[in-house]
Length: 175
Image 1 (cartoon, helix red, strand yellow):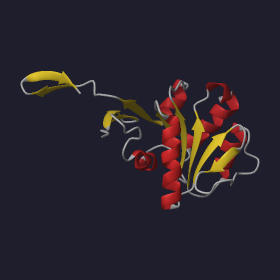
Image 2: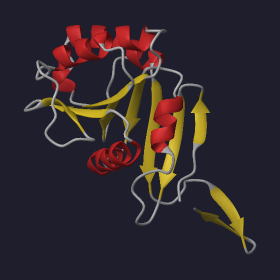
Image 3: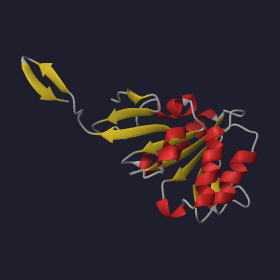
Image 4: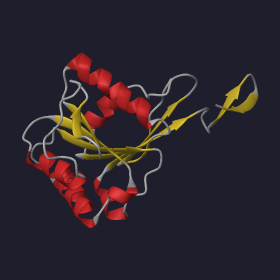
């Protein structure tokens, strides 16, 4: 079971436990985000991408994932890639210029975040028109510059029992 809890306006905490590794409604939270840039910190990035692949195939949405070998690749249709997107900066430029709906997932690899890439991410976060595009930076630990974090929606995924104390059968327990 997952339970969303707002930390502040731009930060959301979602929790899963047991065998469930993908938070319920995560995809909807990405689409409902107030920012075009969404930072997702999760202990299970591969499972989240696989869940987005299923969403793309079932709903027909345009969801792309980037990696250094293939560039931007469609999660809906296997083998479909965006030409000229092998470098992260080229992929982000494609996102800026595209007029279509899409969710674009990028790994939170700090070595890829050059000043040019960070400038493009800031530009994407500030775009007001075409608010139906989402750039998702996904990884187990996010270490983004503070100016970029202020422009982005942050979703923190935690797995395991809740840290909150609850009263059960007259005793305080965690969970």
